[in-house]
Amino acid sequence: MQPFCFSYRKKATLEEYRIDIYIQLTKKDNLLRIIVLCCALLFCLPAVAQLKLGATALPTLVDEDDEPARINDIVTEAFRRMDKTVSLEVMRSAFLGSGLLSKQLDGDFAYLDLDEKKSGFVYSRAYLPLYLFAVSKRESVKEISLLPHLQDKRIAIENRFANTDRVRLIKDVKWGRNPTTFDAFRQLADNRAYYLLTSGLLVDEFNRLLKVENEELLHLSSAPVFSAGFHLRLRDDVADARAITMEFGSVVDDMQKDGTFNQLLGIAWLTKDINGDGVADYISSKAVPRATLDETMLAAAYPLDDTQPGTDSVFVIDAKTFTSREEAFGALDGVDNVLRMSLLDKEIYQRILRRW
Image 1: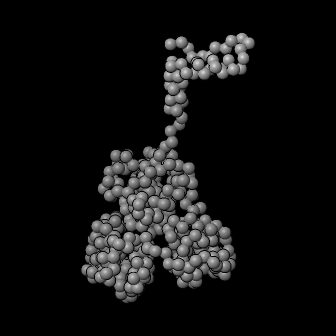
Image 2: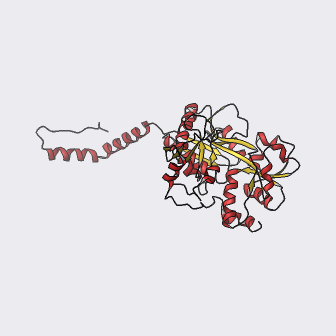
Image 3: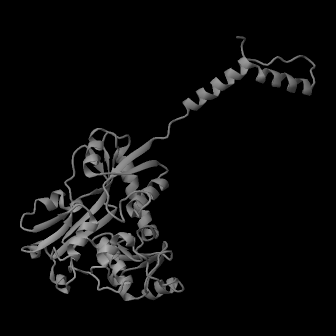
């Protein structure tokens, strides 16, 4: 096989050069060399590392691609802004643990700190708090604010929470364990449990179903019985694990301030101290449907940290800051006030609603 080259004749015309190049390129041996050269160049390009992350399911928050999955959306958007590729898989808890142990997974994208943090992992700051309330059809549940108040009553709870380190060690409460969120709500609906212990976010979605059916809404305890948070955790042997979790936290901070969290969570108002003065500020977005625009909506704002609103609170609408409630409400004037539909599957929960 002769060396790959072009032969140029002296005083050749431009057209003769073109013909000669075409002939050389279409020769079988030369064409093979070009293909081999292109393949070699492709293999020399740096590979784009993809993080493979897993998590266990929690309806409306962590789920498969064809179901509402707000945490999946948050993590996907954060990594998009970080210009990093990520693959998210939803699996059973046992499979998640074995996947991390065998290194088939790089981490957990919805680690809930109701479990003790383990060595061998790097954790981000909590990017979404989770508040577990005592829930009941009876208004008397509003008198509950502490765990001891639940003693001597049967409490429905799903295994996603019951199997965590903080909850399973509690022996003074009569837990009614359930494999799924649906089963936990059904146990309460069938009066087989006096209370239900679950996420305030899930109660809000269930109440939306009840409101459409003109049924009496569920009531919540005056304070969360447990407070926890979702974290990104990576195995500490993953390349740049610490830098990735730190960048993730920084990107999430921006998403919480610019209205992205409101849109991805489907929550009209969030609160967080965004200017470091120790007072919670109100955050919203014009893209999020809201049932009304008044003080009751502010009172129902979902807190992203443990600060409380006050007279010095500012209002941030789509990253634009307003110093007064009147200015903020004025910026939202004209936005359609509608009740967002529930993220829970109405067809599935219809069996509970019919017996409500």
